[in-house]
Image 1 (cartoon, rainbow, N blue to C red):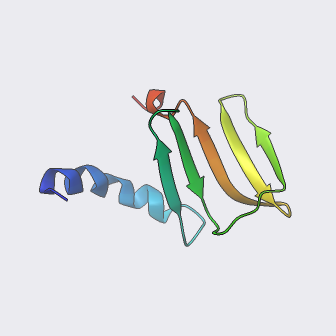
Image 2 (spheres, one colour):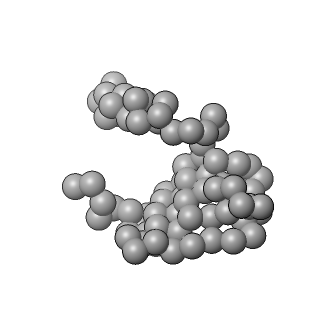
Length: 77
């Protein structure tokens, strides 16, 4: 990883440390523009809800096990 890439990632550290989960897996599907954030692996969601801002919150036995962010590239710009 180039130094410039590291410098782009480092500002995320405080936000990542504030997430109330110890392990986080992130996958981005560029073609679908969907960001998958998982807090448990393996996770087997048995319920989910779509929020008004196109985020799918996935649950397993009532606990959040991940979120799916639709239209991810259009956020935070």
